Amino acid sequence: MTEKLDADTPDIFTGRMTFGYARVSTKSQDFDGQVEKLQQAGCNHVFAEKATGRHQARPELLKMLDKLRAGDVVIVTRLDRLARSTRDLLALVEQMDEIGAKFKSLSEPWADTTSPAGKMIMTVLAGVAEFERSLIVERTSAGMKEALKQGRRPGPPVKITKERRETLLALLNDGKGATEVARIMNVHRSTVYRVIREEENKKLIAN
Image (tube, rainbow, N blue to C red; front, side, top):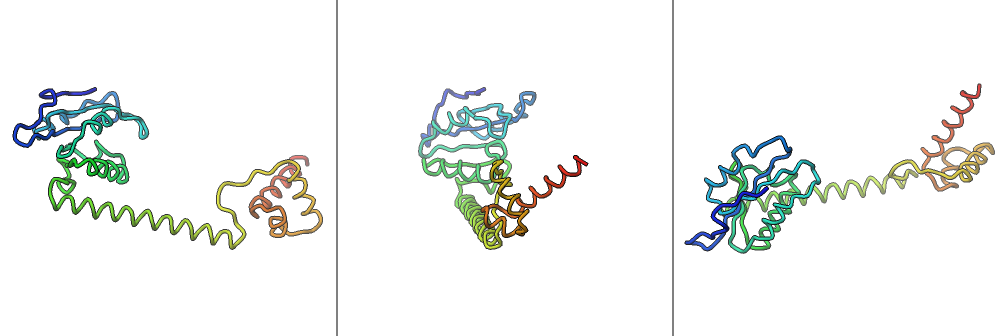
């Protein structure tokens, strides 16, 4: 669904376009005054669509981004109408910035790259998000290294073939411990313990 205003007529003084973007998440919802608020904010053209899923394509958003030119402005009533996460928001604002377009939210005055203060805040937010991503990568890497040192393999339980299972059981029957068997078979110790539990359950059922 698309609402058009003034047939994409640029501002006569600045020559720029002011685009509005409105979105609702379910088909049963209306646009709850979004379009009207965007009109009042001076939008020349409002793109409006209903996108229900987190990963659902948003064709009207793509059309708007394709129309953007340097000097244009994108306005939304709230940030969650445009983006579904901080990362999503920053990626879209960065895409607009590369074109030379600006962005602002009516409900969140700090999210306004048309002003120096708003642009600074968005830059700081992008820096914080990048810092958080680097921390996650660092912690994940450290956790994997520690797990490998302790003989643990990160990830879901390893499925072993019938032949490898028989070899594993034979090693256990020879008196080797779970840690040694895990090392010989190149599997996580939890895999060895899982096989042991499964064999014990089989015996209980048989009895």
